[in-house]
Image 1: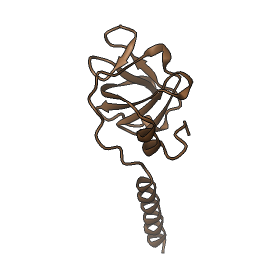
Image 2 (image 1 turned 120 degrees about the vertical axis):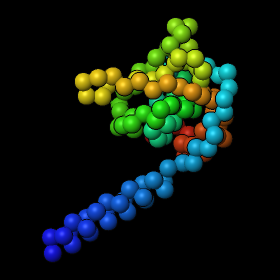
Image 3 (image 1 turned 60 degrees about the horizontal axis):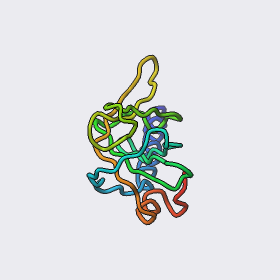
Length: 135
């Protein structure tokens, strides 16, 4: 009886995880561009999954899709992120040594940015839902 309850709980947990995964947007390929955003212009962010983040620029109008490598485990549960300007030029780009970092228990996690794409309104709406704003 106890084993049956345990299996039932595991099945329900798995079903919830699958349902949550199905509601995520399909991100597709991030364009390899020369786009950059000034580090001082970044106002907020939204994590799409452990490899993709949307950075919001001034006035929430400039949106940039960031691809991270390796996948940043547990980035989805973070309420604050830092950007790492690896080449110290004041910009975060999809090439070079730029990245994002966050505190994970007693140490700092850092993931390198391998692509950064400025989003059109249509692409932002596809990725973020109809509202196109930070959720």
